[in-house]
Length: 102
Image (tube, rainbow, N blue to C red; front, top):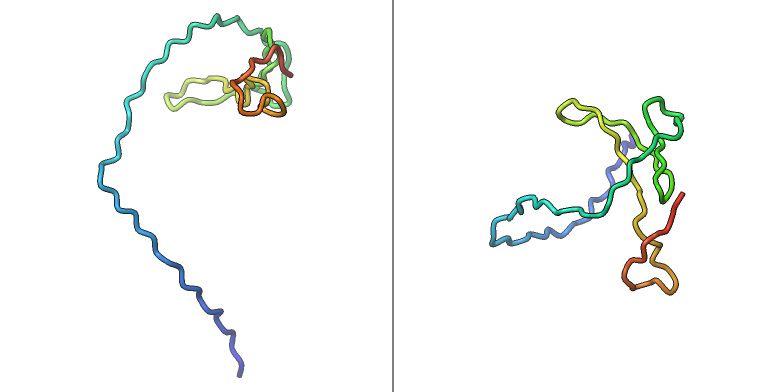
């Protein structure tokens, strides 16, 4: 009878990196943040029960409720824009702050 055949296996070259130094993990450095922080205000509920939307001067931010490793609850705000997109005349230029967003 005819059985199933195994396809040929392609030879893959092996790459070995020769590391001469130990991996150095830098100590965390505290960076002072001197910009004024405004008090956010919760303005709306979200479809997810525990999430929030807060309004700040620049726009609205959606925060997701998360549990920290120590068991405390916090909110995570992701995707906060800090500058205008680097397109057109802004390409390869220093960041230009946003006046507002969303």
